[in-house]
Amino acid sequence: MAPGVRLPGSLLALCAAGALLAPGCRGAQGKFAYKLLRDLFANYSSALRPVEDTDRALNVTLQITLSQIIDMDERNQVLTAYLWVRQAWLDAFLTWDKDAYDGIDSIRVPSSYVWRPDIVLYNKADDQLSGSMETNVVLRSDGQIMWDSPAITKSSCKVDVSFFPFDGQQCRLTFGSWTYNGNQIDLHNRLDTGDLTDFVENVEWEVLGMPATRNVITYGCCSEPYPDVTYTLLLKRRASFYIFNLLLPCIMISFLAPLGFYLPADSGEKVSLGVTVLLALTVFQLLVAESMPPSESVPLIGKYYIATMTMITASTALTIFIMNIHHCGPGAKPVPRWAKKLILHYMARVFFVYEVGENCKSPRHPRTVDGRASKEEPHGMGTGWAEESPGGGSQARGCPRGWCLCHHDALLRNVGYIAGCFRDHRAAQRRAGEWKKVAKVMDRFFMWVFFVMVLFMSVLIVGKAV
Image 1: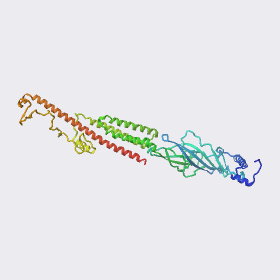
Image 2 (image 1 turned 120 degrees about the horizontal axis):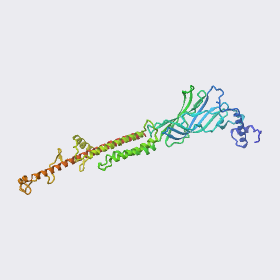
Image 3 (image 1 turned 90 degrees about the vertical axis):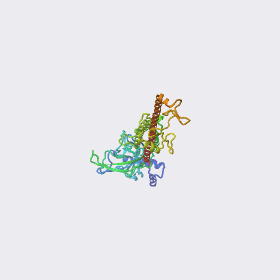
Image 4 (image 1 turned 120 degrees about the vertical axis):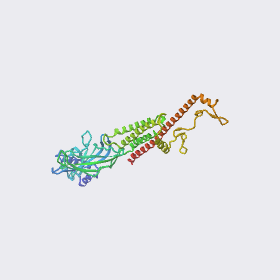
């Protein structure tokens, strides 16, 4: 369209409404848009607050849209998030009559052209102090300005890992003006919650909500009130990864500790099994400690590891004590009466501990009575060498009895000494066997005790996940 040519009134209305896309309409809109831009910013300054009465506060509304949680650094307590920040306010010096400009109701100009509120993230934890991205603002004929800008923010977040990995976190994002007080800028939240419609799901964290609250705080440095808008990001950890990679291996390893009591004492692997399990749990404990912040609160999984390691340490110490009992030599004292009655009689039956050839229905009777040797003696080990003759008399082998008693007293004393040594040897073996049975019963007892303890702790830790 040539300069200076006016369009008919109906065509102007259609062009203003966007109904026609003809080159004439686009040219008319472009001409009036350039004229509008020149007229608006001819005597405009972006350095001053755009209000006609400087004693009145300028209303600014804020809306946050959470797009993505990039990272949650528990050790450094920093939340990295991708946000869309929308700010809206009224600029009293950027209004126009849209009928005078071919019906143009809104234009988009660089944000640096207009005055902008210095809204910043108070709890920012980034070393870069730059603000939001330099995007365009939408300027309407009534002076309303809307500024949408994306931002990747790093904010400080107090992380409580007491119930890790079944914990939830509350991270606050506090926005407010850095230099304008409440008498100059009145900041409000547009909605009661943050916008989560375009949120990209995070693999580790589940977002439960993002409520917004407005606060008016008077700081110690200044007497004027400073309003701010705080968005509280409610997060819940997805614990599946930690259950399958940290918790279940620990539970399975901890169930190996009671089995150390079931190993035979002569195998030589009872103590080494407990030490191996203890070292494995120490490795898992170090993995958890590397990702947790150094704080007074111990994570729940860390408490479980410590309790399990304490239990395994106790089981290893008890194994050493029981092995010492098992290897009591022939010179050991006899088993006390109370131990015989409690351990060898009652507890052995409860835990089904029997000697070779003995069962629960027909227990093997001891070959001694009241701690003395039985009347049975091995062949040729009697106290005398006399035997009955076929006629019913008693005579010595090969010589008359009187002659043997007179001439072979030394031989008889030697035979008696050998028989006594044999009886002492059998008594020592019997005492050693009783101590071995005591050790075996104690092994079974502590095996079931530690099985119950491991099961109880595992149920407690898994119950937190439900």
